[in-house]
Length: 493
Picture 1 (cartoon, helix red, strand yellow):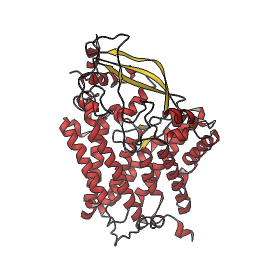
Picture 2 (cartoon, rainbow, N blue to C red):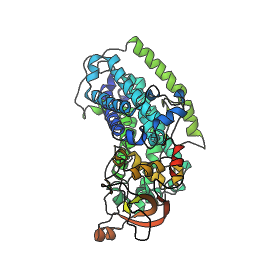
Picture 3 (spheres, rainbow, N blue to C red):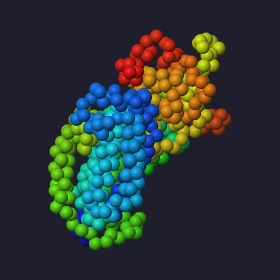
Picture 4 (cartoon, rainbow, N blue to C red):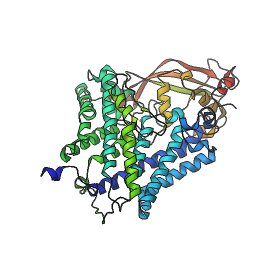
């Protein structure tokens, strides 16, 4: 009986691999779609943080990327669309018709192309889910095609990745904000999180006792359940996987965290074997071949590399100075993870405004720029955007908890708005100056709070807001020192 429940052989993970590969390819598809739509205005030759300037300052081996060999906006677009095509091929399973070498080549190319974007992406690609996608995608290279028995060693590496992801997140919370220890973090989180969604308002209004229970479930899902991933006894592993998926589902319902939660669910597929997945996917494999000698050698090398590179993430988890998200080598093969080590008690938002007036005075009319998803207009319902990632919206949230001079992209953004730059405006929700660009742009800092149920019923507003201070004084292209200040950021050449 116990032997039947124990971890099985490669043939027991054919459905696991089938579901994992296609789900991961969907995440890749979203990531490359983001690059198609956003890379040029953020990082192109006229972007807010131009890649050519980055390539001049950083050596290849510090950030390996295909862009070191050639960079142009057209080449970046070709790579992004190539990633989209590769992801679609992987989703369809077409490449597997040609055996393991072709299948591995498709996954390797996806990983290489996305690595090229991440390593030159600077702060726009500085999120933990970028390294998570790269690490997961690298392991996926070695899973092989459908006619080969899935390598169990890769399944176990995925579980090890899931353990580091979840347990690291749990440790960073216990070592970080005291609200995780007194069970009050969720009282603030749904309102102060980077990108609320339509249900965030309702989650915020739940009774305090429910918030406290949510923190306890968070600790259980991140600090206890992960050990179940590494237990061969199938029922315990299944239970740990279900706990993780339910936890990530709650996070998906309560906010927009890009593809982090979706990718975590994809990795959690490794907790299940074909006996658990048959009811979901009524497919049966044909006769499976054993690994070829080159595949066996590659798997052995992979195991050795992951074992060696795991040393630093383990040391990081055990350290009292644990880093939240970090890569220890430029290929992002084995990383350390964490999320929300601290939780904001209030929400502050930077609101950009412009005017066409030739001079600033008491009667100046200012018009607000609206972003696609971040809070702005208090009456607008927060949208659902995840797993899609709106990079500028996210960085605007970080700007609200810092100063404009701490963000090297903020002044270039203002300059592009003053120029009425269409690629930059494509990142925003409409253009309040369709006829001619503004003469001046300024930024003000507001405190945002969710309305009460009575206020929302009476006014239709999701947010109340209070002006705190001027964040950035009115700036025009002729403001003294403005263009000179941009030269150091590579924006003016």
